[in-house]
Length: 51
Image (cartoon, rainbow, N blue to C red; front, side, top):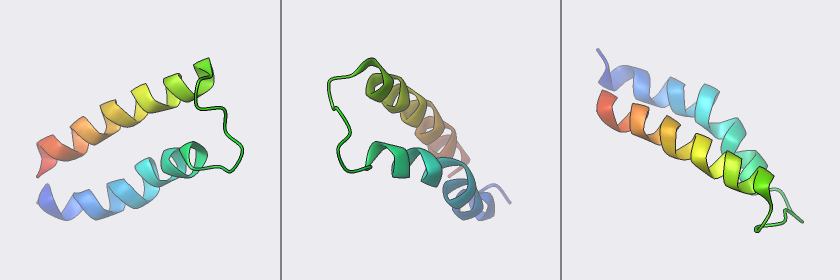
């Protein structure tokens, strides 16, 4: 059952974070980018555990 939740979780929860990280013109050295990357790592860990 958890494996089936990975795709919706990715599309609904992780995708918006990915979109923000991939925004054109993003300052890759900014604190905001670091915060988004840390959020992405936590979300990815949740997704990995579900697999």
